[in-house]
Amino acid sequence: MPEGHTVHRLARLQHRRYAGRPVAVSSPQGRFTDGAAAVDGRVLEVVEAHGKHLFQRYAPDAVVHVHLGLWGRFGDHRRPERPPRGQVRMRITGEDHYADLRGPAACELLDDVGVKALRARLGEDPLRDDAEPERVRERVARSRVPIAALLMDQSVVAGIGNVFRAETLFRTGIDPMTEGRALSGEQFDRLWADLSAMLHDGERRGRIETLRPEHDPARLEPPDRGSVCASVVYAYRRTGRPCLVCGTPIAHREFRARNLFWCPTCQRSS
Image (tube, rainbow, N blue to C red; front, side, top):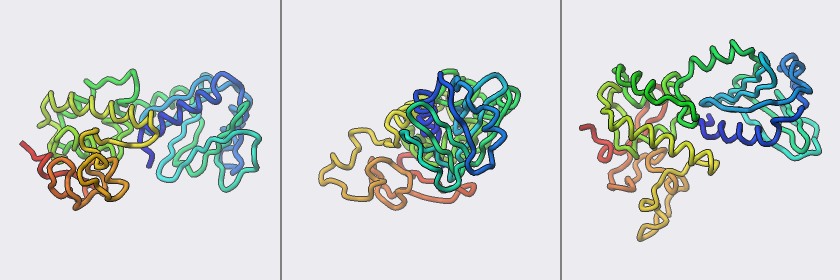
């Protein structure tokens, strides 16, 4: 599932490509016909993201909400248009480009009340300028739930997935099983700052690369010729491979139906 940086990058691209001008909107697949007809030919005012959710605002009470889910893709192409291939839920056509949405978990037309209700269920997004980390701090400080679970709860922090969870907990040296209420103020500040920095970097790059320069395997002697994944991350999917900082094998377990990766030495509980 795309993490928040991917959706924010998509929103930024679509805003640049289509906002401020009338666009044609259709549903070649036929599953979004009424919604597409309601905004077809209107000016797309703004495209923004909150966590893993994309919002295209066409007018008051006319907002298209998209959640890509596990399989969704929103491809962008230069005109001239080609006939739709596969199950295209929604097509947006602008002056120079068009975008096809395939396989989303959600594609729906919402009024302003619906948008407000949806966003009220989401936690703070470290990529948004209006994020309020104090709200997250208060929620975490009251919770007995491990921080590994809290970070994946979209009602606590919006936009975090398995990769960013593993990497920020490693980079901040926090044991994934630490209860939220046991996290110190300094640890929370470090965690939020790191999440924000990594997400912004991921949005800018269009990919996740979490290693600091001093830990890049390409700069080690002898060079690490391991997997591609090992060249860009510390813990995610590096089960059994030596930690790039201390050499301890990276640990793995299934936790709440998701894979969890961490270094037992660098992230030892205090």
